[in-house]
Image (cartoon, rainbow, N blue to C red):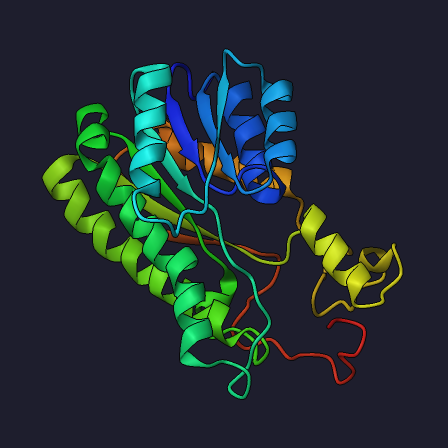
Length: 263
């Protein structure tokens, strides 16, 4: 087991990528703090994992003290803290016309400031365990798409946070900080979002090759498999790294002329 006896906080883990990471971490021997906003979804995840392996915390991470609550729960319930996965994110469609300062601040709060505050709250405990932080970013961090302006900016900032803390925290505290940037992932929320946009239920089976050269997009379980490496000891002293998990070069690819099928 690659994560045997490690205790890991995973934000945004009641569904999607975070849920897949929680399931894989427990399968690899870890115990996890499951976090989200959906109590019934979270309870279902904990039931699947077993109460001996998982504990649930429901709270908006933008609330004052929320980061400390997660850290305290991990320590009180499992007695230690070895890792953090900053996965919770706010994904909103916005462009230069629809993005105002209030929206940008709200997106930054969840996507950039929350990871910072959680790392800071956990610092002494991760230092004691020589633990690891894994930030879940996005390939949109490099420039993003016109209709993902606020989201893309926030993920770019997260990437800088990873690079900076990956160096400074590793040197001073022995804490590794790395990041994976997923591309397009077939999560439950993405499936529902496309349904809400009026696409057929099997929209993901008929994608333009520019988006899916392999014939399909990524699965949450594939992101989770990569996460285990960065949370475990086998990644050694590597820190401050950002790895893109996508099937094509994100920068420089040509979008299809007709994007009406991919809102």
